[in-house]
Length: 292
Image (cartoon, rainbow, N blue to C red):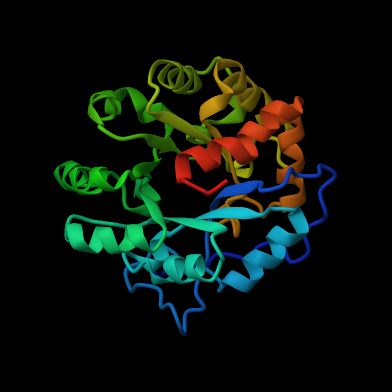
């Protein structure tokens, strides 16, 4: 058996961004890892993260000017969602969560997660994170979460969208595509994968897209300005179903980003303050159910 790789920690001292975020700005994609002594990592995890506990996340968000967050449970914690629900309970209503759920979860268990602030569950389609899930189990989970008003969060590369079109078309609930569909910026906005993502977004009102993972999409590296045309194109199509987030603490990235750079990208994605309000406040409140 190959050893489990250990990934690096987040930037230790991200700069204060130049962009002042509006009140109630939401980071819609971030993670909490451990501490392992309290929230153990599963044995069959694809990687071992450094402990990145709630206190470190809160410190980073305070520096960035972020008021709300959606915590996405990542693969190292498996289907134990306690690390997320505990953080939500401690947030005073400022956090929601995306759980890891499989077909073994009963409707009662899903109901308890919903009561704890979980608003969706995630499925990963990347080979390095386990590849395509069993689609019959995927359908079972969708049926069980639908009555709770959840959505599904999909780590699904845009290059694979055409093959999943029938699955997406029949979904009875909203779905969110992570990290701009992990397109490759070097291939430009006319690449087939990004065109497929734009067509999907324009044609399906159930589809939301996260303007996250700039450090994954970029070919040029920091400050990731080669990602801006992709975000701007999606804003042109419809700014009302786009979401922004940091992806802190940035697991499995080619080079660790400064979160100040990621915040300042929002000013380039959406130069108009009214559109930024949608990306950062209004859209997250609508999808995730934050109170006014």
